[in-house]
Amino acid sequence: MSTGNHHSSKNNIPYEVWWEDQQLFNPNANNNSCFYMGGTLAKCLLHTPQEDPPDMFRRVVRASKFRHVFGQALKNDQCYDDIRVSRVTWDSSFCAVNPKFVAIIIEASGGGAFLVLPLLKTGRIDKAYPTVCGHTGPVLDIDWCPHNDHVIASGSEDCTVMVWQIPENGLVTPLAEPVVVLEGHSKRVGIITWHPTARNVLMSAGCDNLIIIWNVGTGEAMIQLEDMHPDVIFSACWSRNGALICTACKDKNIRVIDPRKEKIVAEKDKAHDGARPMRAIFLADGNIFTTGFSRMSERQLALWNPKSMEEPISVHELDTSNGVLLPFYDADTNIVYLCGKGDSSIRYFEITDEAPFVHYLNTFSSKEPQRGMGYMPKRGLDVNKCEIARFYKLHERKCEPIIMTVPRKSDLFQDDLYPDTAGPDCAIEAEDWFDGKNGEPILISLKNGYVPGKNRDLKVVKKSNVLEGKPAKKAANTSPAESKASPHPSIQNEGKLEELLREVKSLRDLVTLQDRRIAKLEDEMSKVAI
Image (cartoon, rainbow, N blue to C red; front, top):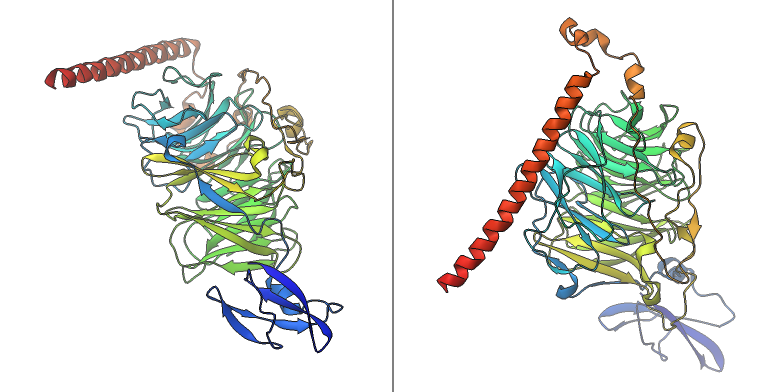
């Protein structure tokens, strides 16, 4: 949409013509006349320049520097081809991106695996390319650590969370040994998300309706949020400074939780009436943005104030598609991008303080439906091209980068598009956060581009689980035989376990070598046959 005005005169009285959705104007139009131009019905109103433009146009056409954002998919040689994207039935994004690597959950036989590719390794990916393959069940969610571009966490159907250290230049051999295995869930783990400002704090949510907050540096489960969710948790998100979390649950409730007090601060029942999965995220100002479905299965988005959740600030209905809407939020520009699973489009909206508060900007459309989506942090964008977002769209056999750009004529740094953004440095240590302290994100300027610093290796000093010392809340349901079993393995058992793990690793390495040898022999056979 565009607006414009034209100074002219009529009976020696100066007037202006205001038009909507036009590149041209009609200087001979009568007052309040309607006409077609470029296939669009426009309405002209004549008034003197001293008068303000009509209210109608102030409502319809809103000034925003993001109105002309456009998306563009990169060419095939800049995509990642021949990737078997996971077919597991779980509504996660299946992709995680940072300024160095793109990670993609893939189909794997005999367990779960995901690829980790350096951003520059585009083109066809060899089937023998090494994977991260330590899980015994399909991987459901992955998330890069915001404070270390070489550390990634994964949750799986095998009920474990694993944290991995990726080598500086990517993988050269399969990675089967995580830095730490976090065990505490009794059912599959579908949600993984790192704390935005505290080092080594990780939240996981499983299909056991349990949220655990871990200190990855010690391998401890520090906080266990039980009995808060009666059904499956669809999404969990930290607030900007990590003091609160908000969750969306299958019982149709949105909850705001103070994890350190283990207390629900605010709750809204039936935030969306539909039975299909919801999503909820915190915005920079503390409000909550949700996506869900109406009773008539129409996709909805809504804005909530957690201090007063009786009624939403704003509700919008989009369409009647079945795909779950995954929201990706840019806290610097206050833009929310909505990517529906199975859709072939990305819609984007600007959140402001003016009614209707959620303003539609535009839609990027393509031909192929998306299986998942990765979202690049702001520090990984090209500021010289006025790139304000970059997505990594998963097809059935391909990962396709899509860049969102604001057209500008100047080559200078556009400081209005790039306010200071969250950098890779943590504000506080894990122990400080668990002691009750909060830290705002440490901001960096992108004026001279982002230069990655040296990442230190993740070191884990194992301690006994602090939760094991707590009395069991459901002790009445345990049998005497179960209570007699010692939760602490003996030293002999630990030695045996380590020996078995070493043998498993050596067998995995042997299988990998045999696979490569077989592939090589098959190539030689095909050449002989020719």
